[in-house]
Image 1 (cartoon, rainbow, N blue to C red):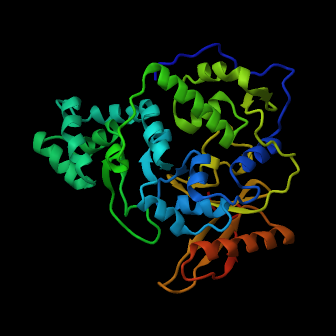
Image 2: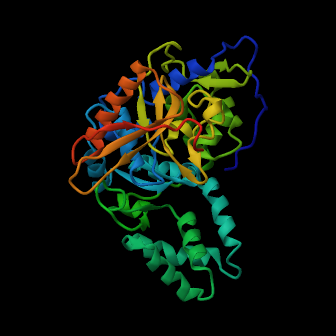
Length: 390
């Protein structure tokens, strides 16, 4: 990315309307389809949300089950089989489930983010010619999906004394490759097999000129605000991993509304985007680990109470999270017994829950069980988290 920082402005004008955390939360929940489920086709939802975090294989299914009316896991799997959507490294240099159009467009846009990982692994490969490595790996991966072991063997034949993991990682970072099915299909297992995105989708890789990059970046800013706004420049940088995005926001300023949060930070938004009243009801929702709702703002207080900001992680492990009244209020996990036996859903709230909310959480949990458990709905159980973990 060659864009540079424009005028630095982190504080909004005093005349800009103030949006508190609750108002910001309701606005983002509305755009994330979490205030009420949407009757959208699955592919349209993936596009509207600008992808689904897919570091693990099940989270995209959990995400859509929380957001879409009538969602069935096979609907997303069918799109993956037809190559309408795919799993590919993109924002934050992590795996996302993206539509084919977004996979081909956003992957080169965030290449500077992926390059950070690439450079780190290149340091472990003294004497390895990166251009030669790419020239070997590209046709090999474009020909058909290849297991990582096969890619390592190809590259070790050229550099037998090199670190095999570093060789494969550099290839994965340097090239726009994706994870081919059956990896990521619901109810199926499969090792990671990589193949070229253009080859998989049957389309040429986009060639981004400076003007094309600017236009794509501006479009992505608008789409980010449509899915996660109102938001600051730093918020979007947290979402995608890119830096120096102030210039893009300044280009778009005439088309945007400007607000400020309670600390005075400047927030941008689309004029016609929903901004519900702060008291709009927000029903309970069960979200997967790494859901983008929790990873796409520098300031997460709109959905994560400050006292709970460290409670959804344990080391490098992230818990599935429960939203109550629009805020993270606990964790949960799906407990699957023997094949064919009903699953159960264990809810561990961070604090005692009133009777009315508990009933709503139990109802929503039973609905999620019906969607996510092929064996049918089992029971929703409540454990105690409070201050005993995290």
